[in-house]
Length: 553
Ligand SMILES: [Zn+2]
Ligand SMILES: [Zn+2]
Image (cartoon, rainbow, N blue to C red; front, top):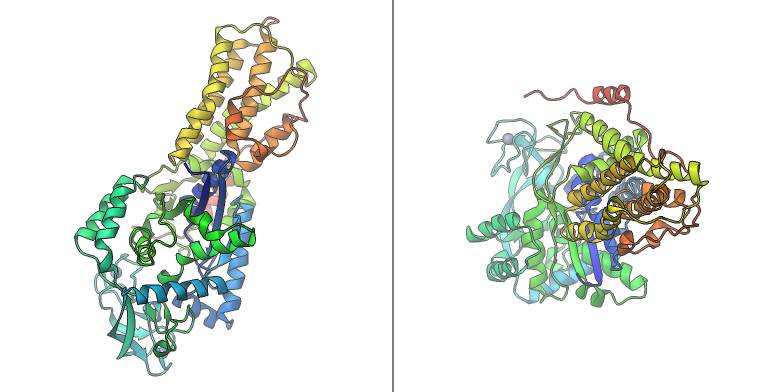
């Protein structure tokens, strides 16, 4: 682990609100990791940006009678607010349409071009004579050649999930007329130049997930294809060549470059040397499995193509998709929960707890289930953790007027409890370092279970002997929980910290302090109250009914 880190997560497309599926695979794991690294003393920054360019945004802004600039500004602000309400703590949230990114993308293109990684080729493209424009990707709709579903995009059939080679009965999606086919000259990125260096990089990087690596290596073996990086639309980063007038880059050429341009702007504005920082930091890109191709091939190839002026990623944590009540999330079918909507029902920490707990460090899909959510919150978060903290602090208040007593001699059970605290930081920290966020959270819950049992076993309300030691150790364990929870449940972590009567903010602690018994005899607790309130099944039934009508298969 280096002493610096830059963390990014897949950029939200500035074309609609953030929902539970977005946060589960990328933003939450990235946020938890960043908070942990900061406690570890790493100079870590989490940067992100809205992905502003491309055909879908252009079409939608035209429909709403807005300029694309105003349209993306709205979603940039709204996304940022929703993330903030969920406790996603970006150090900087910018835009792919920022002047810095546009300039950077053009510079990268020029460098790739002079290094011989770009070439021109004439291609045939749909053209609408009525609208007088070329019609890339989503501008053309028709019948899917595979599953025969009607009204599908030419670049993706939403019914069967395949990418049609040639759509049947193509129609211009603006005016519904049949487009013609015209010649246009496009710029291509020679991905094929990078088969060897990509293979080498994949082999040498031991931080990448083995299963993902394996199928990326298979893609390379079966032959890479050069990449059309041109779009004949007006909304994008202009290709900086006279002969390319009216053409812009394809979104996947410019958007991941915003990881770099956004980080550099943030670091330079802070008075740091941006490029030096980048190249001496651990680089993390958190993604969902749908964009593996872009992050394991295009992104590293482009960085290799400019002589690794900016270092390649160290980690690309890749996770699966979230389903909702075991079905695919779909806004149009109302099988969907917006992040903003969810946060009107329950505190952010409930959702953070549940989504980390069910989310392994793998590409397996995960499922949001309302009943499981209820059980997890009521029996684990409240019944175990909330109960222990409230019990330990409440008892101290009742019997010792909130003042931590001087412990007596430790018996075997006390020594075991002390040992638990001393091992807690290493055991949990090593899991977090390996990206096993779910297992680390489970460790915290096991720690809490242990102390619940310890407290029960000691029966401090009955006995005179050993009571003081039990209180002393239990309150220190609650402090350990408070700091350990910070990365996962920042609000609850701070609440416990305040109830413990500790000064300052919980995030001013070092991670390793969770193994110290630094609440001393004589310390006074703050005001104690229950941390959480129960999830009621009547409410859950109501929320379940709001879903659908769903597609029955
Ligand atoms: Zn289809
Ligand atoms: Zn048309």
